[in-house]
Image (cartoon, rainbow, N blue to C red; front, side, top):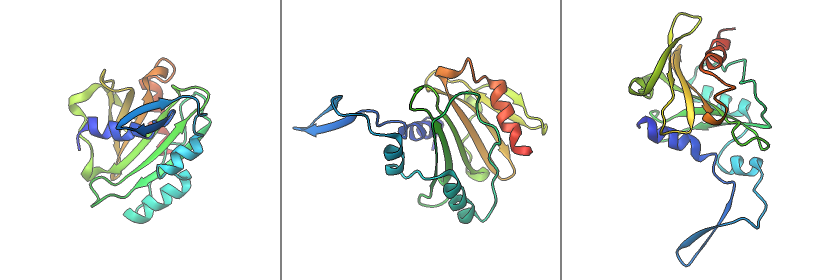
Length: 185
């Protein structure tokens, strides 16, 4: 799966702010209905508590994973986790989502997959960043996607930390590196 498809799948979970009516082969937004709460949107999409999703992921791969101890210094109102167990292991991922129902740009994602099925991002790299463990991380700031990403490998996992570009002045590449480095504590 290429990066753009993965990014598209990653962000499909953020849709659902409007409800849609389908009639006579037309789709139209209905803004008279109140927005569906994030709790409903995300649980309908297979999300659950972060702890439960991590447990599912670890049981599936029979390995422990570590999440960053730090999150971006912006406000979040919700966080969810989802283990995607698709056909074969090539697309099996753990996704942790932090969102805010008060600040639409406050979206932060952590996606973890086995390193043998990593998404190649070298052609999208904007800059190479150095982690405190001496390894490189690739910072991706592609104009065609709504999120900036820091991609790195730790143990047998590929991590992708993604932040909405709307808060990129507050959550800089250096802050993403600090989040990645917090895994090692």
